[in-house]
Length: 494
Image (cartoon, rainbow, N blue to C red; front, side):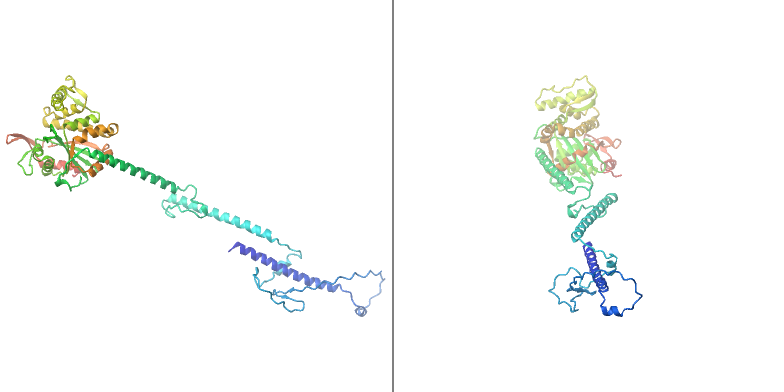
């Protein structure tokens, strides 16, 4: 109910009571006046005579009263205006009335006023009504804000509730309750982060594209449509070529399969001995490294897949110079060498120095040294090529040792010496990895630093025998045992 209507009704009721009170007062006044009128001599003679009492001096005659003018308008209880003659007054032109037409006079209220005049100050009443409205409005606003604050606290306490956590703007410009999250501020922070990420992604893709342009891309049609992943594992065959110049493809001096598994968070480095006797598709049986000489990386990948049931679609070929430059770019490697190994390092340095046009004794180690020694690029290459200590098994183990340290040091070197890695390695690297695949591999490189690196060698100990076939000293291999081992290590298949 509207408080203003209630106050107007109260005012109307008071006015009606006052009109009734005035009407009754006039009637009583008329009665009192009639009682005080003087009695005529004829009526006085007819009055009974009592015993005469001593007569007092007569008081002077009362002063005649001025006749009271008659009212032109009387109010009856029905609210109609009438003349003294009783005839109703004709209605005037209709006006907008503030009071209802049928009014009832509250006689009890008029009687309770004890014949005292009542004055009503409408201005004061209206002022009080306005103040009451303001107070009521403030109370409603405070109650609404309390309800909103309680609803917000309930949402924070109970998760998604109420309006689903949506910060709706409240009427009257009040906004969200105190303590509510700043929706606009959070949105600006999110937009800023997305902008920074997009800029970084664009710069990163541009830089990787420039680096990829330094490599030698060689597409293999038979592997062009194959994806880079097989059962969630990225297999890339690293081939170390012993080519002496750019026109000579050379032989595969080292074959190491890098298997990156996101599920097991490991990097498997698996060396394949080059003297294994294997079936080469389209050729007679021969040593494994002969496949590279017959058909390059494509035939070598097909041969490994055919004999060991490991799907390989991507390769990278590095020559002597690329290997040495990469080791120098990461700051060299520190390895444990025997005195015999030190002497063989100097022996293998002779050939490298001749190929590079350097003095034959360049980078020689002190032949009395042994123990932990810091090796630079050419020295690490000579150490990896030695097959006279430990035969081919020892040689592949030394290759994995060097590669293991290089992989661990690449992330730091990309920060401290990116130019050395880019200019020293990539121009001497040939691959069939596409530009998109290269950008993907570079994007996950930061995760690889946390992966465990495990070293393996094929064939396993106890799964091969020495043999001579067609005057070739080879290794006859139990392929089933090695297949089972590779699937367990690479694909985590039990």
